[in-house]
Each structure stands twice: as structure tokens, then as C-alpha cells.
Amino acid sequence: QVQLVESGGGLVQPGGSLRLSCAASGSIFFINDMGWYRQAPGKQRELVAAITRGDSTKYADFVKGRFTISRDNAKNTVYLQMNSLKPEDTAVYYCNADIRTGWYRPENNYWGQGTQVTVSS
Image 1 (cartoon, one colour):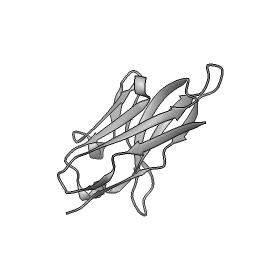
Image 2: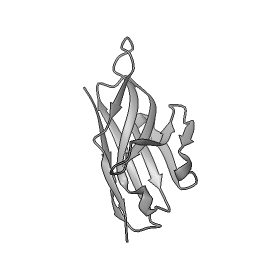
Image 3: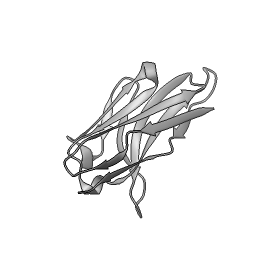
Image 4: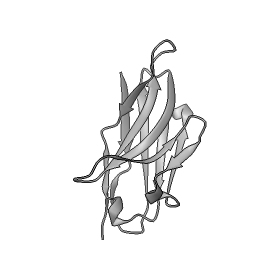
């Protein structure tokens, strides 16, 4: 069994910062790509940022220059540093990871339960 647990969400004023964390636990053999998605009310879930095991990153245009994704492979954890937050960044943020639970097992995709980020004055 594999679990992804996010933390770090909350209420912040426009222009403020938050740091999200997502820790993977359970029967983990290898974690490949990790990423953050978000879903605002009435909208589809969308990619925010992703990072490979080798630390190659990609970002959605709407967060470039404001958000930074990073990971600690020893801790099976991915982070999202969010700066210069805007009201339109308000959403539930979900962690996502491609994980193998054994060398002979296929890679499966896992989601966290989500953490709410609200940007409001």
C-alpha cells in the first residue's frame, strides 16, 4: 500500500507565500516523476509543476517565476514553494507520483488527498 500525504496549505494574503510538502510512504521501491496539480471550484484539475527523479522540472505558464518544485529522494518527498500568490491560485492542490512497489512490479500512478490553498485578503 502506498500513501501520499500533503501538508502546508492554508489561508494567505495576496503576495504571500506558502510551502507545500508531500510525503510518500508505504511499500515503495522507486519513485519516478512527481508533481503538483490543482483544482479550483468548477474547473478541471490542471498541472502546476512536475519534477523527474533527476530534477528536471516543468511548470505551467501561470506559475512560472513564482512557484518552485523540488524533491528529496531520500525522504520520498516533493515540495512546492509558492511565492507572490494571487487570488486565482486558490484551489485544492494535489500531489501526484509514479511509483513502483517492487523491481518486478509495474509503475503505478498515485494521488494525495489534496490540501486547500486560499489566497484572500
